[in-house]
Length: 79
Image (cartoon, rainbow, N blue to C red; front, side, top):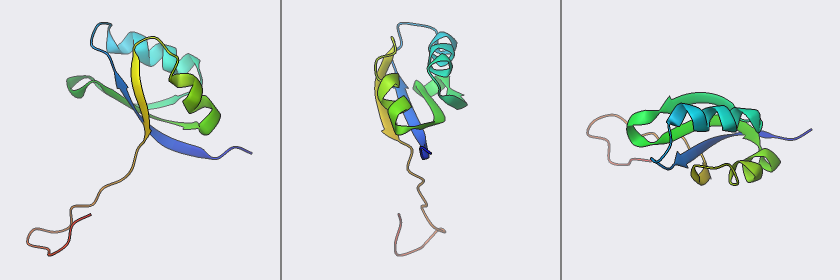
């Protein structure tokens, strides 16, 4: 069974973001968030699906969605 990973998809601004989200969903991405303000869509898919998503019209980049923790204010270390 394929491992499902969270992905961050950067999209072009020349098409409606909802149209691109629909195409990504049709290719197998489980869309989690559509972040229109920053031109990104997040979702879950296995690695093979993520490779296919790179070919979807309007997709500029597909990268793993890595959680970040800045820590509490005044902390010596972040990340």
